[in-house]
Length: 168
Image 1 (cartoon, rainbow, N blue to C red):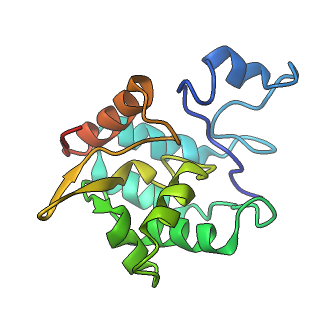
Image 2: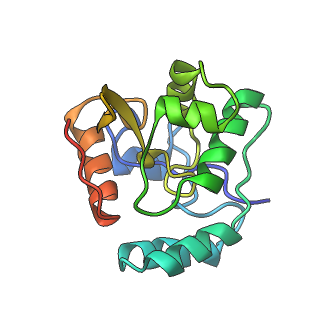
């Protein structure tokens, strides 16, 4: 079994405290863990934080994320797998471009819903998907299912770490 969920500290998910205790108040495994520590996840995150693109990409490529089929529609899983496979460090695609890459060129809105449902952000890099601003331009869009400043600031940080700056 691989990674089941990574939760980022956005308003839509709650605080770090909520992440640690979970909705029921029961202790939850730390981010990057599932039935025991997965050191590959920790290595990928550390390489990414260190700005080592090749090491981070290699570590993430080794991971075979576990996407619970019961909780994600088939289309969502297909889109998330396409994103993880096709969009590399420092690259950004629009929702429409990812829809086309996934074989569904008219499904840009559904791609947005798939990004919001992504159970393992960072491993499946939904921060690399942006809104089309017309004329080939891109803008930040949302992140983690939210458009609030806290969600967008996380997306800005993740993209900036990869050398990408997008307008809001």
